[in-house]
Image 1: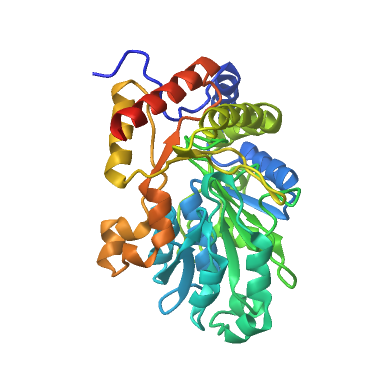
Image 2: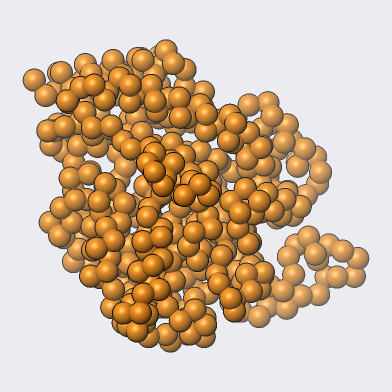
Length: 407
């Protein structure tokens, strides 16, 4: 039995402003993809400084549509970090390509390991911004544009030929609102993908988006149109367009998918975006700083990095590492906290630990840094409504847990 005053890990922020926004859409009579979704896209364009944004029902489907648009399929390779959530790898499998995993340095993709993994089959690289701290985008973009890597590239699709090099699809599921070299994440790579799942800093309940920044001769508006069409069964008109008088007729120009965002979801996102920088990120930063102030002074802990000369996190996760703890001890600390009513988590089990990818032949021992990051990591609660008193209770609980387990 958990105590009555259990502290959850990451509940969404739902207040009267959220309820009013959703109610307004319900009363409007238009609840599927429509004006609110398009408004959210336009505001993300401005917020992230990007050319075009397409909002869909998840990061997973949004990023998969991009892989399909780029012609990635059987015989191709997509390089990803071994340390990420399964969705990063799953979409590569969905399109029939091979996920090529590389090790990490402090959670993010090791650029040296990345270079060694590039072959003539490599079509896409997907760096992942773990916990909200951006990767070194410039290093990755410089790598794919370097003559030796460009000369390896073998296009087999018109879009690949137009780009003339490996595409970089940034898995920014965690990093909406983070900054790289004083610019918001979203416009540093060819494409970036965000998640707006219920546990994310900015949520639409379920949902995601891709931001498009492909260079000339690409027309990012045309790409947006193509991806939007693919997300609606390959249909040439969306539902809102078909409601106009006499405009019922449409065509199907490809066997597309069904992964559009609804206006109900977008209404939540618009509320969250309007208060994101001045409210949400301020509170999340304060919570993370309170944790770090408590744990940094103890040699028993390694606190996460949230900021350096080039990068500022969006404080999505507080990934605390227990120095000297092995996997079973870390798990015992989590159980101790749970028994005290404090919910924690682990981000993530590296992909080679998971049955499906283990069955494909990936071996955890090939990624020692990923294992080291995972073995003693605990993610602590971070969310807007978490009070300072609750943060202090969590801190004390983790100290007590470590003393109990690591004695």
